[in-house]
Structures are given as structure tokens and as C-alpha cells.
Amino acid sequence: MDEKKAMLLRGWRAGAAIDERVLRAFERVKREQFIMAQHSQYAYADAPLPLPAGQTISQPSTVMLMSQALDVREGMSVLEIGAGSGYQAAILCELVGKTGRVYSIETIPELVSLAQHNLRKAGYSRSVTVSFGDGSQGFAAHAPYERIIVTAGAPSVPKPLLEQLKDGGIMVIPVDDGTGSQTMWRISRRGGKYEQQAIGEFVFVPLTGKYGKNP
Ligand code: SAH
Image (cartoon, rainbow, N blue to C red; front, side, top):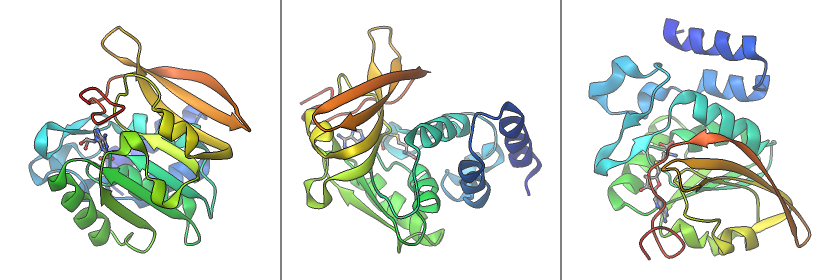
């Protein structure tokens, strides 16, 4: 294995905050297949990297924290908003296994194609579909979802996403907190009630669309 990749894994294992299942997913997915060729030497630096169309792929430790907080189990149905490179979707595919399903929505056509291409090349096309659309409105076609992950910074939690979260489900979403960065929330649904817990401060590209920043 790449020495930098092994180093990241050693650090997380020492920290003991990330489950072994999530670490194994990271081990299996090749981040180098999801980034732009000119950045390949940084595949396992713990840093965000530029994607086409001014977007970014999150740094590995952010992907790990979000995947950990999402508590994805085999067989689950997961919705991702913001496919980008397809990397986070690939991690989700590993976590839901052969019996689960990942739906990822992306609003920039160029990135829909990129994510589809990357996921196909990496061998995940049986578990995931990437669709073009405004994910701030969710994806009604396959709702409700046991898990929802938003990988762009939202001005507030979009109502359609709360509605499309299954009872007992979990959503992880970065929401603007007025400081120029976002607070990551883990939202659990119990019937009509939603409990939320803050899990840290992050910086994401903005969520656009009807319930995003520029309706
Ligand atoms: N999860 C991605 C990184 C996402 S960057 C990865 O692993 O590579 C955030 C992405 O959200 C960008 O690609 C951006 O185009 C997309 N996005 C922003 N607003 C959106 C919306 N309303 N619906 C769907 N995608 C959106």
C-alpha cells in the first residue's frame, strides 16, 4: 500500500475514533482514481483537492468523520447530495455492501459524468447511481432513505431532506453558522422528531439550488 495511505490509516487507528469497517472502506477505495491526474502525488495527503468546475474533493479525514457519523450498515439505502468526483459515494458503496444502494445527486453536468466515469472504472456501478439534479430538494424517486449525506455547505437544513429521511434514519450535513465555515450536524429522526448533534467545524463549497444559496 501507498506509504502515505498507510500512515493516514495508522493515525486513525491510533486515534480510535473511526470504526474498523470505515477504515477498511478507506483502505479499499483508491482515492488516486477519483482526483485529477495532475494531483496524483497528493492522493494521500490529508488535504482537499480541486475538482473541475471549481469544486473540491474533501480531505480524507473529513470523509472518514462524516462516514463514521453516518453509521452506514450493510443493505442500507443512502442518498448523497454532491457527487463531485464520486469518491465519497465509493466509500458509501463499500459500507452498504452488495445488498445496499447508493443514490448520488450532482448539479454540475460535467461532474455527473466525471463521478459516473470514476465509479464505473473503480467497479462500483452495480451499487450506485449518479443522477443530475438539484439535491437540495432531495431525490423523491427512491425516498425515504436510511441515511442522507450532504457534501456541500447548506444555508440551513433543506426541508425536503428532513422529509425524505426514513424514521430511525440519520443525516449528516454541514450548515453555515455565520462564521464563514459550517457546523457539521448529525441529525437523527425519531418519528416526527429530529435530534441534532454538532460534530465539528468544516469548510465546504456551497450547496446551490432551491434550498441552497442561490435559488
Ligand atoms: N462528495 C464529493 C465532493 C463534493 S464537493 C466527492 O467525494 O468528491 C460538493 C459538490 O456538491 C459539488 O460537486 C457541487 O457541484 C455539488 N452541489 C452543490 N449544490 C448541489 C445541489 N443543489 N445538488 C446537487 N449537487 C450539488
